[in-house]
Image (cartoon, rainbow, N blue to C red; front, side, top):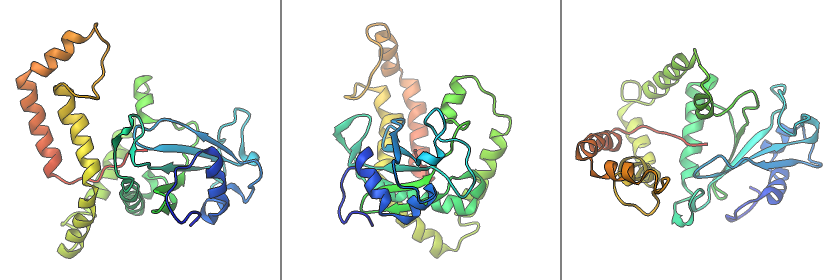
Length: 250
């Protein structure tokens, strides 16, 4: 463990942290001189950094395609608030623990579809994992760009089948299943946050709602006054709240 108590990291302090963690610096070929750290800033909840040693930098200062024994780690740190909002919306940093546990279990069950977790530090709420280097991109961005993914349905269904079946009562004993359900009930705050921002806030006046005003004022009001829509959303919220599925955000 690099630090004995929690502290937020930045590009500079993260380098010092990595130098104290063999599971991370070994992925950089033990080349710890002039490490490059970039905060990619693409997460709503967490801070995400890409770490690269000079020997594996490409001409564009991003990760190139690397042999499997020399990989750029991605480092995620959860702070005690929602990143995209700030300290005005607090959230437990323990969410990183549940993400790490879920990723490790999903990686065990479906390793071809889950990036490897190299390191987890519960005190620092920090996960070190494999960075999926270019040409990989975030799926959302691919959809927006109109890219077709002919194997997406096959890969997602295989991942879901393996992870859902092998963590269910169809496969696990009652004792094992109840133990895991009890463990993940501790993730209540992240589940509550998702329910709030997806199933509640958009359909009423809420502190964090944003839209292009005045151009979309009527559309926003129409959503708030659509009781049929609210009923449908309430049914979806009920399904979300009563059917436990482990979902992780990077």
